[in-house]
Amino acid sequence: METSTYKTAAFQKGISKEGAIVANNWANRPEDERFISLDDLISSKREKSRTMSDCIVDVNSKNFKVIGQDSETNLMQGKMFVEFKDETTGQWHQTEPTNWGFNQVATLGSAPASYMRKIPASLAAECVYWGIANNRKSQFVKPYSSTNGTLAAITGQDYGRIYDHDVAQCVKDAIYNTQFKVPGALNNNGEYDPFYGVNKKSSTTLFASDRDIFLFMVDDLNPIEVGKLPNGDPDLMFRGFYVSNSEVGAKSFRLGTMYLRGICMNRCLWGVENFQEIKINHTKFALSRFVEQAAPALKDYSNGNSQALIEGVDKAKATQLASTDEEMIDYFRKRVGLSERMAQEALKRHEEEEQHSARTAWDAAQAITAVARDIPHQDSRFDLEKKAGQLLDKVAA
Image 1 (tube, helix red, strand yellow):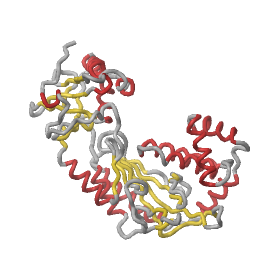
Image 2: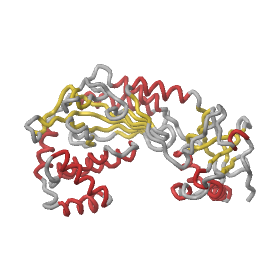
Image 3: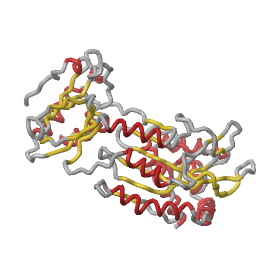
Image 4: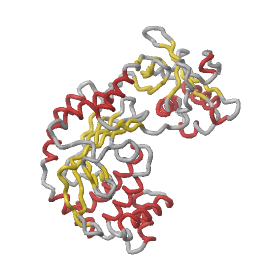
């Protein structure tokens, strides 16, 4: 197989077209971006989309190349580049894939992306390119790249892109004249304050990454008391909802309900009020479907009866899952899928925060969502929080 070196001198030196150092994002996933307000997120994503464009490319032709460049000092710090030619205009594009973009490139070559990241860039590129070149079936795809040479995605040619900024704008419009907002936080006295200043580091609920956005909105002006805390204060929860989307093919457009617990800011993805997750595939009618289905559903949800939540929490508190720490760790590992280390950490965090050992279904859910707060990427945190919600759903059924 013919291989080539990258011809652009700036890229060979690891420098972008603007002269900035090119990040090694194909191998190392960057942290999620955090935003203070929906307006900030909308503005950022809209501005970024203005630099993006897509085209149609036949990956099984000479018009598509994957090129790896090894570092002279560290074989595991090399660069990855993707060149492709627009079938319509004939223009060549020279790009560096994001972490998610490389996942999709590797998939085209039937190569495991996680393993490709563990070997030198030149070898990884050759493996991926070999897999693509030896696929006899012609495959047209739609690369999505920026003017500064970043390859954000490669999707099927018929992929209907729903832009993240449009989704966020729809959410902003849907919550107009409702109580849903970015939640407050614990103040300096350890009390929940719905108007406490939002900060990016610990309390914001608006996130964007190289593959998705997650928006968590809460009605924290109408608390629901679900019990008492060890000091006798009311244990408050707030209705909320989440929206996730990916304009780069990582997931569909989704809306579902959640609850936020005031004392610890744990998120519980629990459908106790029978609000089913709305999943909308990426088509040109997706946003209008959101307006038609989601907006009315959110209004009904915000005005719903809290009795189902209170009864669900009571039932979870009354359902014993273990009588010892060892039994609870065994439950976390076998029934929830936590690693031994994470199961032990969940148990420890629960005892520190709740001041008693985890034994019930409610305890288990709080332990799981407590360790989930430490997960840096929202999609992974979301998956773990959903397991806690599924645990509670089984008890409430």
